[in-house]
Image 1 (cartoon, rainbow, N blue to C red):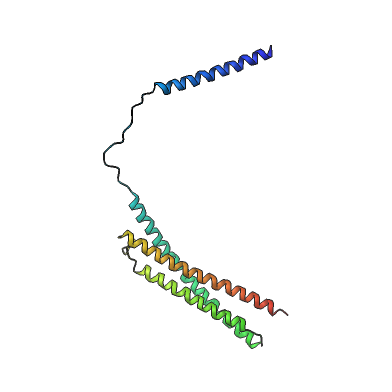
Image 2 (image 1 turned 45 degrees about the vertical axis):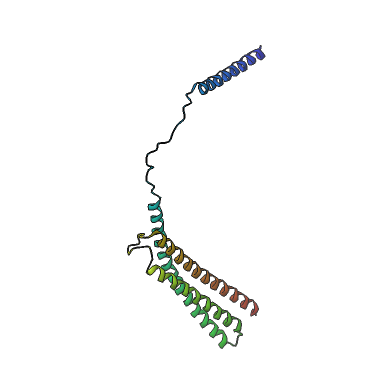
Length: 182
C-alpha cells in the first residue's frame, strides 16, 4: 500500500515536471522571431575622458603628498648618518676596528645622495607640471600622463635607494656586532 502511494506521488511529480517543460518549450516555439536592430542615432557621450582627467589629478596630488613624506624620510636618513658617524667616532676612540662601519657608512651616504637626487628630480617635475594648471587640473591629458609617470618613477627610485641604504646599514651593524662580540 505504501509503495503504491509512493509511486503515485512520484508519478504526479514526474507528470508536473513534464507539463512544465512542455509549457516552457511551447512558449519558446510560439514566441515571435523578428530580428532586433540597433538604433542608428548618435551614441551617448562617453564620460571616460573626464574620469581619466580626475584620475590623473588624483595621482598628481598623491605624488605631491609622497614628495612631502619622502622629504621627511630623507631628513631622518641624514640624521641617522650623523648618529652613525658619531657612534663610529666613539668606537674609534675606544680603540675598536671601525673600518667596515666606515666603508658601509660611505656607501650609505652615496645611496642617500642618489635618493636625494631622484627626490629633487621628482620635485622639479612636480613644481612645473606639464599638462596641469596651477590648481592641479588637467589641461593636456598626454602631457599630464607623462608628468605623473616621470614624477612617480623618480619618487620610486628615491624610495628604493633609501630602502637599500637602510637595509645595508642594518646588515653592516649586525655583522660588525657579531664580529666584535666579547
